[in-house]
Amino acid sequence: MSLLIKGGEVIDGSGKAPIKGDVLVAGGRIAAIGDLASYKADEIINASGCFVAPGFINIASPSDRHLSFFSDRLNGDALIEGITTAVCGTGGVSLAPISGGSPDAASNWSKWESLNVDWKSFSDLFSIMDKIRCGINLSFLAGYDSVKNPLAKKKRGLNRDESSVVAQSLFRSVQDGCLGISLSAETLKGDYLSPDEIKILTSLLRTKSAVFAMDFPFGEEKSSKYVEKAADWASYGSSIIINRFSRVSTPAGLGRGGSVADKETEKSFSILESSSVGGRITASVCPLPFEEISLYEIIPENAIGRAPKDTAANIIKKRSSAALEKKWPIEKLAKLWIADSPKAEFLTGKTVAEFSSNRELGSAECFSKLVELSDGRMSFFLEEDDNEARRRAIRDPRIIIESATYESIGKRSDFHKKISGSFVKFIEASSEAGMPIEKTIAKITSLPAMACNLIKRGFISEGFAGDITIIRDKKPEQVIVNGVVAAQEGLVTGNRGGKVIKRNV
Image 1 (cartoon, rainbow, N blue to C red):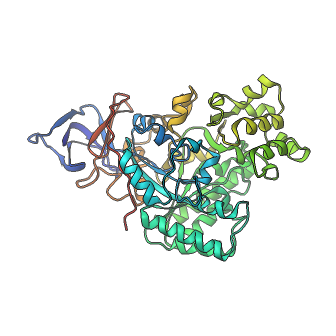
Image 2 (cartoon, one colour):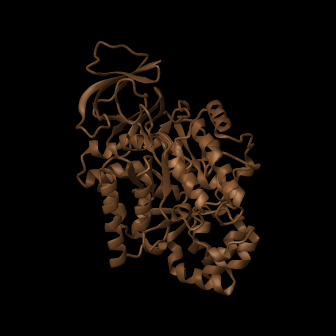
Image 3 (cartoon, helix red, strand yellow):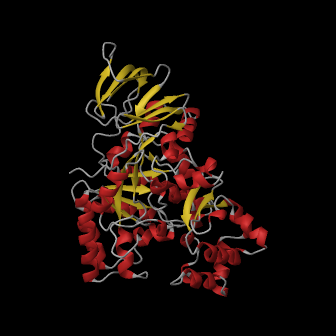
């Protein structure tokens, strides 16, 4: 199967200005670029008046933890915004490896009981994904918390024997083809890391071509110290990615500004700039003013019990209730949208304020009831008024843009209109800000490809994968995955050209 894209302005992903030309894709790869008037192909696309760009790459996809690539194998919401590759397993949460009967760390986010979980290792999972074939390419990180949590059961450091089990499991996952390891914000903070665990992480950091992706902690006043820690880890030789970098200027998670936040933001960017000289550390940020957080990032730590019913009861106790009322007063609940609630789907797309006012509940009673209804499985989007780190990151040519889109909210609620299409909205905003289109495209193509060591992707170059997004009037018109037209004019075609992309050494 061959495909000839004619007459477009080719943006190759390198940051260079577009050039007019044709692109030939054959056998799933880019075969030729230039004046190809004499070439023939099985299918011809007229790209006159369009930009022809590499397929967009989402470096921090939540699709796996929400199981949405099982419920929507076409990955429609992702394709429509131009995404051809998604990196899953971020934030320390991944669907493998599994030591028990379920993906334990993902259970706080998803209704995994609906799945036939017949895999243990990433090798098993990759075989299954190859068979079901998705609409986009998928790459995976192994979640540190997914391996640790079944052993620890509660928040504590691991002993030497437990640490050895974690090390073997993570090294095996990387050997199976994972791009690298992801860490939760809690792990990055290091409050529950034992000396034996630190030895594991140090050893993993020295793994050739492995990627370390970490979520920035939520609601931390002294945010720059975590950027310093990431920079220190980068010195071991791995590629370090700090996801959710906009959190550096959201103390207490509520978007409050002030001199402390401004100083921390400036210091964090300064550390990132000085540490990225060798290309070993980068950051990513969602361009939309929303921050996804789990239920357990909202509830006071001392209220979290062994089971959701225990947590629900603990929340309304005096000490936890006072802390929750202070951090999340009633007036703030209008900014908190219920993004996903697999155990209580009728709640998806509503604000917590709507839920509380309908039942005349205070903040603590409200969250207690939500825990009870959702069985502890719920995530939210916090709508922020302003965020200097986000605005600055969007303009910074070195910082990668991530997308918040995942299919489950798209299928259940009108709220997805607010949160979907991150890359399209980024392109529109960048154009209004005067950023050259070639710099804009690099932040969602070549930069994430290089940060994640995705070989032969992220550029339009001969021999590279035939992942292409054709843009007209700042919106994807056609999306091509491995040489297959997967979406056109805002609709999916039904073709599933995606592959599992494994780590290359």
